[in-house]
Length: 252
Image 1: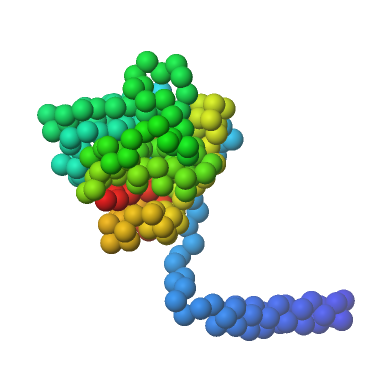
Image 2 (image 1 turned 30 degrees about the vertical axis):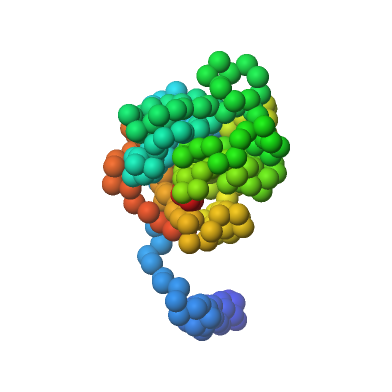
């Protein structure tokens, strides 16, 4: 019995010594730049689920979170929306942000059957669209649906007038848009760096301005299909550069 107790005490001593030596050594191996916050247990009462709240990006719950950022971006550049304006699929944003500055409005769609379309064309081979024709192009949530995006960017540059402005947005973090995927495809997700570099291949680098929107909360909420109305304004407006939920771009 005494031998068993001695063996047990030896194991306890070794365990204590091991913990004293190992934990400080592990902390020494961490980079100095890594902070060591107190461990927090996340509370996930409603997010611990395998299905999103909405599969249509929140349209069935209110204003989708990406649309909040898109409209904020277009509102901040509304003076660019003037003269002859081209928009994709419909002219909602042309009317909402252009107002009486818009003299002529066109809507482009890739396939026949859209009653709002005045131009039916594929931007990767749209040779029938005249060059130097538009003062502004509103190009929201479209680039990710074009496989040959470089050819599309070349066309956008060609059909803009000198001094014309391209106002674009595209996903960084998002669901797949099933409607788009099943009809013409959804191919890409971009970052601010990739977006800036691919547009600078065509537009003068000094005329390309790229920004990101979002944070970890809005990214999670958007992936679940929650709506703008379900978050606070300060939550929506907080920017974390490591969570690029949406990319916006202005190119002249």
